[in-house]
Amino acid sequence: MNWDETPPATADDAPSGAGGRLVGADADGDDQAVEAALRPKDLGEFVGQERVREQLDLVLKAARQRGGTADHVLLSGAPGLGKTTLSMIIAAEMGAPIRITSGPAIQHAGDLAAILSSLTEGEVLFLDEIHRMSRPAEEMLYMAMEDFRVDVIVGKGPGATAIPLELPPFTLVGATTRAGLLPPPLRDRFGFTGHMEFYAPAELERVIHRSAGLLDVTIDPEGASEIAGRSRGTPRIANRLLRRVRDYAQVKADGLITREIAASALAVYDVDERGLDRLDRAVLSALLKLFGGGPVGLSTLAVAVGEERETVEEVAEPFLVREGLLARTPRGRIGTPAAWAHMGLTPPPQTAAGGQAGLFET
Image (cartoon, rainbow, N blue to C red; front, side, top):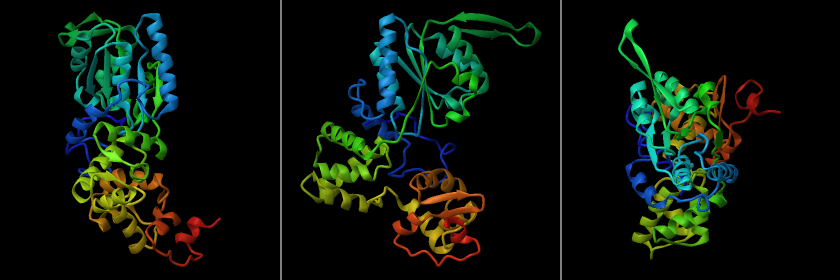
């Protein structure tokens, strides 16, 4: 139940073929409506991210004791792990309002100046996908974060004048899925940086049980375990799968979600026991069956599965690599022994020259 309220990706943002995946980590409009009701309200309710939660709790308590605003916070990690949720909890813990916007929405320094000048004292500004903010706005943010001041440029050319504008103290919470794209001067201005990790199955089971209670869904421990094991370590995906299994249990069974019901429901939606969906298995199947496990170039692999190169690289590959089912090498993509086992296939005999032998021999 800890996930982000990120605006849905547009056609320009998402790779072709990426939309509508049941195991996709980005939120669509349906997800956002449900997530609003399921979000934890304080750090005590927040499941997982123990280290970040403990550190953030100290930061917020110290700020409250001083009677001031909290340090600026940077949260990094994959989509769906709880960055937006934590930003809302920060505001709630500080008893402050929250303003939510995103990097792509701020294309000019004037856009940022308008937002900053309207903030009230102590307000929390949540800036999602902060790495996608325009450079002029980013440079204005440096001064705003450090000195609570911005310079508004009036006029053009030699007659332009910089008018300093004082800002009330505020807390910026930045969220990014690509911390490496943030310039060092911006990263250094955050007083606290937390990296969100993928969730363990046991943590996802707690997420699922809590969400089931809020959704008035009856689920047994084994049913929750089955869903958690297919959720890719991401609470947003766990909650999405729970809703689909709930529908199946309501129509095909008596409403109780057991291990068997969960497995049957997710088989209908093409989500296997490791969380792979149709696209993931298509990539592995082409890699193993058509190319003998590789190495094969990305473009060739994309043509073989009938998808765009960007879809394979940005949508399917990250999870396959993280699961140890696919490896990226200078010579191309290769299927690992775990991929052969998962797909129920027998690898070809290893040869002395290249191929599987050269890649996996020790």
